[in-house]
Length: 124
Image (cartoon, rainbow, N blue to C red; front, side, top):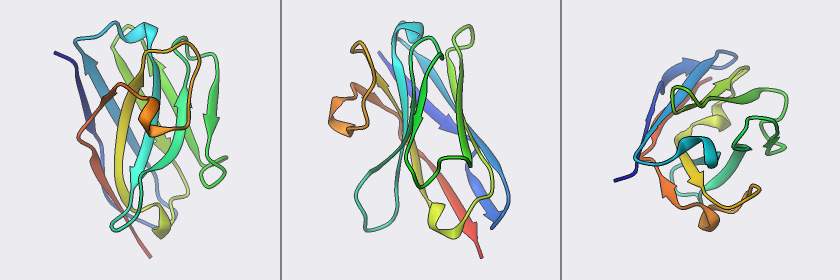
């Protein structure tokens, strides 16, 4: 049974930082590209960024580029999202997702497994 469990969310002031973690089990983690998505209240799920299976390539949404960084530790079956210079518009539930295809994608429907999400709230 595949499980993705996010942690590290919380309430932070604008300009602050948070680091989210996503611990994976039940899959060969090192063969999956891992994505981060977010969903604000009343809005559609939005791509944040992705990291390839090896960690050798990352791609980010323009809205977070230069502020957010994705990394992974395949020995720990964990992917991270470091979020700096947070803005109120970053407030959302953040989900990690696993994609078993070769390559990477920004499309939610191309991901095979999803975590339940962790709430990030940025106050102004």
